[in-house]
Each structure stands twice: as structure tokens, then as C-alpha cells.
Length: 173
Image (cartoon, rainbow, N blue to C red):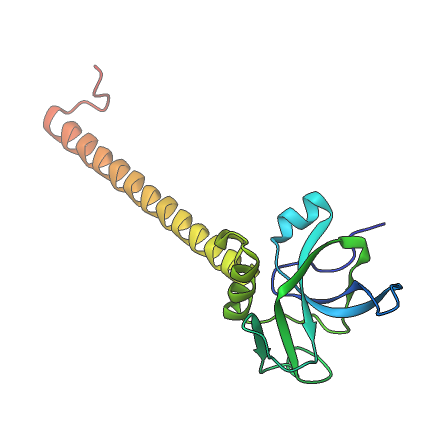
């Protein structure tokens, strides 16, 4: 199956969470979940780390209340369960109607809760780092180009001085 949904860190998706009920029967339900792992890792492994989102109010020490739940497209006040995360095959994940992402601070809290390296922060942090590197690279190329232009101008000036002082158009002769 094709990798159809955006699995970047901070993205909210629907994932099939399973549980066992009081009678010992197992079941599953699509639940909102926060993607934690880096999209490059997700694509390479066709898996993604996700954290459970519930409508139950935050009551545990590892819970994080999503104050901006409506902006994320969630139907009611929601909580991230810091102690409930799982690895899913990307083919099991479903997109929400809108492309929704949480802020970097929420994502960093969630990644810290599950012990993911902080190098897997967020797509916006990755994008910012890429933009900075490109700008620095362009600046270096421009600076190098300016140096080359200055050296060519200095060489031309030296040729002109040499021609004026010696009358020769070819400095080698």
C-alpha cells in the first residue's frame, strides 16, 4: 500500500489502538494520535511512533492537556497520554480531514516523555535548519563570488599598470 498520509512529527492522525476489555476480549478503535518520530525514519521503516490522545481530562502526572484542541481539529477537549505510545505501520494510519499539527513545545514534551532523541524535534525545526543552511551557503557563495570578482579586478588593474609602464600588452614577453 502507498504511503498516503503525512507522517511528519507533530501531525495528528487516526491510529488503530487496541485494548482488552473486562471479559478478556480484544478490540481496537481508531483514535486521534500524535506522530512523534521523524518523517525520514517513518518513510524508511514504513512505521511511525504515535502518542495516544484521549478526551478524558488530564489526571495523571504524565498527561498533557491540549488547550488548543479545537484548532487541532479535535472534536472535544483532549489530553495527550504521556505514558501511552505505540509504533504503527504507516499503512494503518489515517489522515484527519485537515492537515493538523501541534506546536513545537507540545511535540518536544511528547518526545521527551517517550525518550525519543531531541534530534527528532519537528518539521518546522528541520525546515528552519535547512533554510538557515541554505542562506549561509548562498552567503558563502556570494562572498566567494565577490572575492573572485575583486581578485579579477585587481588582476586587470595590475595588467593595465604593467601595460602602461612597459608598453607591452603581453606581460609574459
